Length: 332
Length: 290
Image (cartoon, rainbow over all chains, first blue to last red):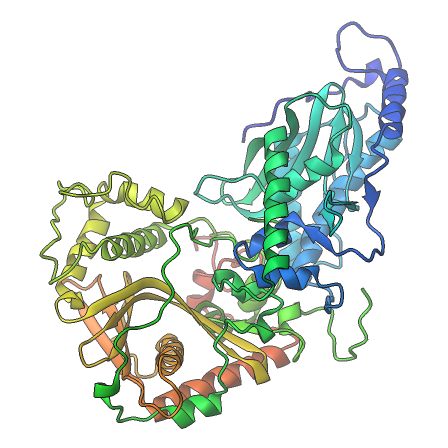
């Protein structure tokens, strides 16, 4: 497995001692840098709280890309948001919490120290989940290893900021976001599945995070680097960069989609995404005769002469992408 | 967010909560549930990755063949029993005459990759050649391929979904759903649950094309066995009794899925040998060699 570039070893003997052999900061300098970085965090990025504006994540908006009704429902502040605990989330959460705690310990201790990754899965996970947890940590260690140059790590916060149009909060969850000395924001994603065979697109959730966390005086074109660890099959890491152009493009896309949803909130675009749409129950685009109606109307001796001349199927969408990832919250 | 519904079970996925969310059913989910409930729980509730989640050779051949047939039909390349279709191992699928130089470009990355690779794989070419012997193109009109079909039973909060490999209409109005089988194809599908789901979806589609009280067109589902040397066609027609049986079966299964709390394993050498979770499931009967 190829590692992303970056420091990989820690020499404990150098802690707190000026050392010409290493270009990374040592403890005193590290603490100064860390604290400075914490203090410069953008004040307008806030941890999400109760707001009258709807919170939209880029993933939510993009998941049912052409369906204005879906987005209009998300924008409706009176809609029922449902809730509950999705058990498929608990393993993912356990992995991210464990990694966050391990990195956080280094930062809080005033590193640089070896990152001690957990080797034992939380007992509340099931047997199969524990296996995946342990395997994932091993792959993570192999892929990223020690991380002594880390200055800040965030995970678990839901960040949001009002959009420029003032109609919604752009929201994103921070999971394993790293800040280092003299390098762009780094986002690490752990995907508990195999790497798809098709060319990966930049994830709108990552672009939204980059947009939310970009320092105000950032002049570099590269806003963030995203490392994705795929843990199933042949474990591997893919790396993408998010540029200012990507951020602008996302903002523009969101703006257009929200405009379209406000303009015609009943416009539907049924597709594979309906299978995971939370609003499907009252969607007029989905056929929903009752079973009784089906059986009542069905005759075993239909009259072929009366068959309709043309089937009114929707035109195939030339831009449709074969869905291989319909159930992910994060994917386009 | 706190939830006040006392029937809410936090150990289950949203979609499994009684009457709170829509339960999506398709052929894969149902067959997994029937095979082993622990498998269903791992795959569809916990969404765990399994050991064999990388694409197998057989799965790749299946995907490539489906994608190629869809592309070729969409371009009108397979008609009249393949008279527009030239195939031998030396002739690339997309190389003749007025071909689009970028086959599958509009159909997403998977299809694009697949179409580009077809000409290099004789196994896919052989399956497509078999299809030309079974294709109804000379007697029926091709409506569309990879047709997403949905039927929401709102009162039960069940969404039945499926994807027809191809949809044909015959001159007498009969609507025919084709399902390509690049592996094993059964000899009869009278009692096949997958065919039953396709029948329900196709019947619903047929009824949606005509106003209430107007006669509908006949509907049938055909499995096209492409792996058999001469090809094989197996069909079942929609009848009221068949639809009733299918509905009962699907609704009963939905009830079972919603009621299920413990998702017990159904270990057997056959089930476990091919299970994606065979090396982590404590009940697995799979051996190391599996």
